[in-house]
Image 1 (cartoon, rainbow, N blue to C red):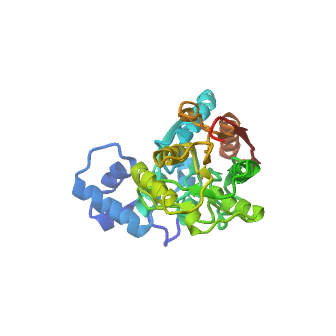
Image 2: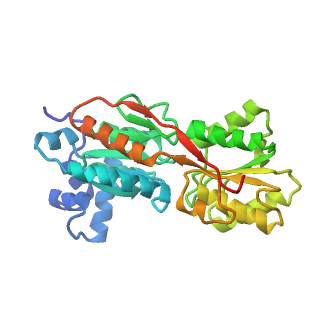
Length: 336
């Protein structure tokens, strides 16, 4: 099948950048040294032309990389590392290698991903724009979405795995409510790139929904968000506690956020859990070793990893995308 005239080619990129097609290949495959000025011209041309290699053509050439990309918000987060670790145990036996990649929400990042020969992509990045997700899908590579957020404009060509966030966060609120806690704070993620939770984020929206259903106050001062470091978050929680706002419970978006909030509570002279109960999410290793030990909601990472690999394997073989659902498990310790 011939390319349409409107589809940019590697030759077009080379002409726009003023270099040879070989140089374009070196830049896109990142397998040879290219002078910085030429590299920048090539990447600028890729962005301007919205160029990406033809995945169908690569398949017809019989190329298969046995390589899976996992795109995440924060690759230093233990949660993503654990899922990739579980995936790797299964993927290796099937001949796949997995790379964990931090997302960059721009055209160049998508062009770079599309320029590489990969067999499947897993996306677990709440700040990654839908238009970029769609471009990866349009490249013809199987894509599985770990549903940290909703993707209303993405069709059923992508696989979806719901890890239990919606029900899990609701259970966190219900647990605190059952212990008489009615004045809760929600501790949002730290972001050094200004990506904070919106209502399409499943943890955030589920907290709001359960607070409303339970008749608990969830005004703007009940959300600690917009912080770019742990130090800033610590100060923000202290400021909220010292403002006169009544607080008797805290829900952390993840265990890291909950632990920082708990330190702030203690620094303000409050006791955990006697004065303020605290619950985290993801059941990370640190949750057992902080003092007091942190109550958390556990995600079934081994089962989720199996589902990801199985789903991708089926899609790579030509099968249709599907949707899987998982539940979380409460691990109650000393902070509640």
